[in-house]
Image (cartoon, rainbow, N blue to C red; front, side, top):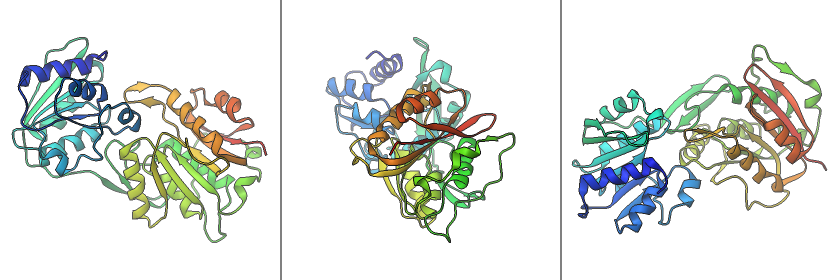
Length: 367
């Protein structure tokens, strides 16, 4: 294993158990390289990955969810510390509630990403928490003696603008809130898209302070006809998908994250909206010409690493599915190089609106 965190977790496990068999499978969370290594050593391993791309790199079948039946037999749980404290809290609560009372948890990460809050989260679910010695700028947190805790995820939030009940599972982007980029994109869509039915409307949002808009970028086009076949690409908690569905469009919501897919599905149900939700790495495999509208607030990191390439890859999968005249509405941090990418890959792309932090663009596929 090339990754120092995975290697340290494997070595800490060996110190804990030696070569002796553990009574029950090892459960590995969000570290496919470690799961594959332990499986190759002949260990009994279960593996769970939130990110579908990680899951696909497993050499063993991943478990669908970290439920009571999965955790009941896990004597040792090894996990890659997530960026999200909420996700760590959810993992810790699940383990404390459902794993055996003598379960041992080993949670590893790079020292530059470790915070005291991670220790505090684990201490809220386990009676004993300690840190390993550091090695290659990595460290492992050990937790044992699970406490009686109640699950605190998923969480429901009532938004005023748009008026939605949002259900957030731990780890989803912008859990329980409307982030600034999505807000700006919703405002632009309200100005540039006509509802599928006249009695329905997209929410009218007050203008963001300091924004600059381009009135020419919202001239009528394919997006102003009724009943669009729309896709929320990288759907997160489902705010964009639900807004489009409420406006009467047929909506597919797609994300690689298990937490995001669950959030979107539950948000749609909480608002009594019919949305197709798919855990997938973009739109690869979908029919050509099957999509009229794509909305996307693309990721700019993967885990703790800032990287625009996953967003570029995500948008690229949508291009073969676009019908002639279809539109792609994208919001991104203004300093990121999405505008030249969109113009190069899709053609005609205009800036619709920008504020101090975000830019919204509208790309139209040539007919």
